[in-house]
Amino acid sequence: MIELYILRHAVAKPRETWRGKDDSQRPLTRKGEKEMWRVAKGMKKLGLSFDLLLSSPYVRARRTAEIVGDVFKAGRKLKLTASLAAEADPRRFLKQGRFRSAKKIIVVGHEPFLSELIALLLMGKASRLIKLSKGGLCKLTMGSAHSGDALLEWLLTREQLIAMS
Image 1 (cartoon, rainbow, N blue to C red):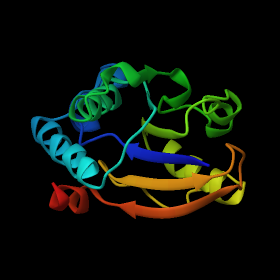
Image 2: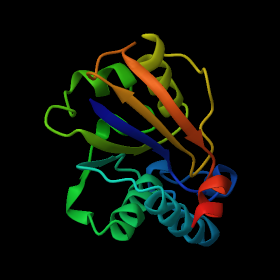
Image 3: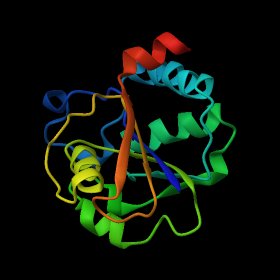
């Protein structure tokens, strides 16, 4: 059984104020970073653990993953992968077989990629079934990393996770 936690990056600087710059370099806001520390502490209070922490290489996702790694004292488990970049295809991410040995995985990335990944794992079809809020966390369990094989355990907003910290 695989436990897959899907985490959307924390609140980043608005696109409008970042125009003309490389979107992959858009950072978290100070407030977003502070909230993410509390979100990660809420995750820890839930008793979560993980073998692997995968993140988009984009600055806002990477920093979100680094905060989670720091709170869980698991920074060495962090791996960056372009297959989680904002414009990536969820099917390609699944085909890369990143789930082979890990049984508890946190994936940090972007919308709409993450919602499409969740739908693909639940229903076998990438669609926008849900919208994961910034700093929101979803837990799926599955027997394998094949599409349509997952069960949605829960979906929490940033505010709910902060309330647990």
